[in-house]
Length: 506
Image 1 (tube, one colour):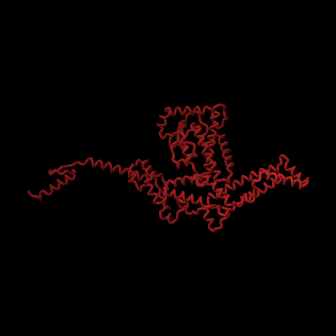
Image 2: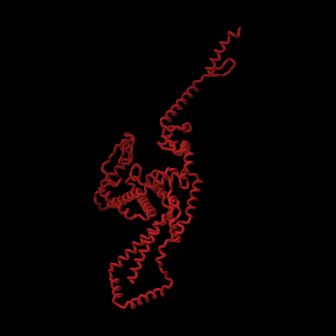
Image 3: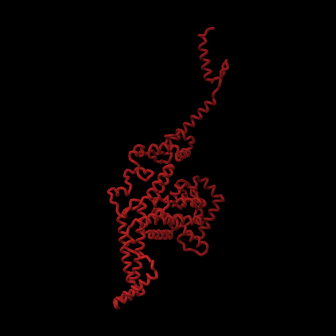
């Protein structure tokens, strides 16, 4: 039966190629449908590799079974061999009467049922936050990061900017503290998520080849001591003067003032950190040294595993840089949405998910189907809650093409008058005014320059002091009739009375 199995494998390979070519001709409109098609094609390619390997093993004929079967068919009576194989087939089906027969013609044929099954798998493959692979979902990892010892509390939006940075000052975790199991598990979960996300969103890419290249780059960088944050540490304490301040290598902290830096050198915290750093360096734990026996060897191996995971996270994040930027924009967009807009977006997402995908299993024949496959946005208009560009007349009506920069907000540019007027009551602008020492923010509307704000604040302070001084210096006078009035008014009243005396007579 080896020859029959060989024929079956050749037919299976041809059917798989035909199934892939049929699906390659179709370009689905929805992202979910494209992912379903790509995952289905990826499964076909994996089956081609498996069947090809089986076929190669048959052609190699290491045990000589194929050669003996061909010799038996060619030299003996062909009918005897035919009836012998027929009896074997009948005996098999007698023992397994309900065994289904695999129909290769229908196995890989494109059908609605197969597509719906694959789409349901895609729905279970992604979370709602990921939106079928458009965005990253790092909410759980963000919570794990906040639970690490020694980290600063960051918002989810800030975490998206720094989750792949493992060197100070962005990363507050010191090198000695990275050897904890909690940090090691956090890095493993982060790297594992990025790997799985890459495989789910790009099933046709050779992800294993990418992972091997990352491992090779890390090995070379580790041997040369070029892994960021894991280079050779000098045994003595040291400090580095930069343009902004002085960096203490022992405490891994930057000081703006030189006097503060000198005073902290005699503190217990600095002395303890310097002693630990000397012990760490005395073990000879440099990237170029061979591993030693004992605890230093185990510590060095653990540092290499941690550095490898950090390096892998950085490389995978570079590969998914566009998804990362889209995630940041999506988070900012959702923060500015009302509850009603979020609910409308969720309803629209469910409505799109309920639509039947790739109806009929063929190519769309509509003339305008190509224009609907991707969003046409040459003017770079802002996107509405449904992910489509807003109308151009609405864009012009709200003046969204006019830029309003605000120096107090860190030169942030607001698009449109409405967003510009609204930002004066937002936390960003209020925080910028407080950094300038301005407490009464209600009087600084329409003021965006730092110099103008400081001048106005100084004028307000001077006016308050002047008013206070004038109020304190008011002298009250009382006339003969008991009327109380300011001194200036009293003198004017006296002069006026004196001026009227000649006309009043005796």
